[in-house]
Image 1 (cartoon, one colour):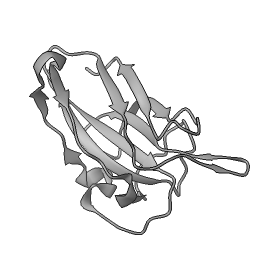
Image 2: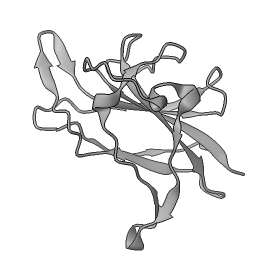
Image 3: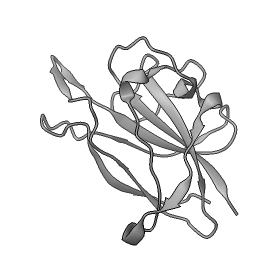
Length: 146
C-alpha cells in the first residue's frame, strides 16, 4: 500500500516571494530514484528563500513554528513495503542568525495524509541551533508511514 507523505519545510525569514508549493494544497511531488549504493532517494534542491506563510494548515509542535512561519510544501509517495524513511535537510543557504531571546532556524515537519485539512503529524525537527550548523537537519528516521 502506498501512502502520501506531506513534507513541510519552514523558514523563519521575511521574504515576500510566493510560489505554488507555499500552500499544502499545491505541494510539489518529489519522486524516488535510484542513486547507486545509496539506494532509492527522493531528492530536491529547495530554496527556503521562496517560502511564504500558509494560512490553512496547522503549525507543527516543534522549533519556532507559528502562524507567521513561512513554509514550503512537498509530497512523496512511500514505496510499497516501506515503513521507515530517513529525512535530511542539508546545505541550507540560510545561516541561523542569533536573535535576542532565541534563534531563527529552518525546520521540517513530516505529515501523513492526502487531505490538507486532516493531516497526522508524524514528527517535527528543527536545526540544532549551533552557529555553524548552517541550517542542517541530520538524518531523522520516521516510522509509522503506513
